Image (tube, rainbow, N blue to C red; front, side, top):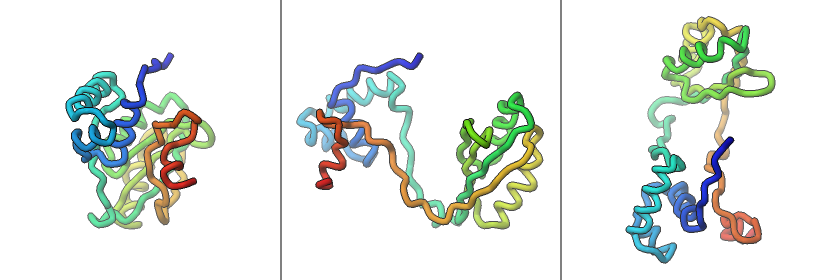
Length: 169
């Protein structure tokens, strides 16, 4: 059973602001919430100890580094018992940047980043399709990522998302 954490609006506001821009200083967050920077620091430490915050990431425009292809790969397994071994093998392929165990048509749905279509073809034919337990794959190439955002964690008392209110919606 999943544990329900007792978070107040200050905790959720801190998370929301950090999701928007993780480089925001504790002092600035404190000013916006009318608490001290020290309070923000203590709250973030508590959220980390609870496992709610598990790290931070750098946002990079990978196309500027030569990775022009983002592909999604639906993977059909021969048998579900191959899942753990296949995931272990996929984890060894650097072009596989995420993988999900799914319901529906595919056993695994993976995201790949490659330099170009030749690189993608090489990864598919020389690495992924040679993994024991994979029956077949279906590849989808992304033409454009239109939305990439975290979920809204802070709601007002009426249940409306605060972001919508800010934008006048």
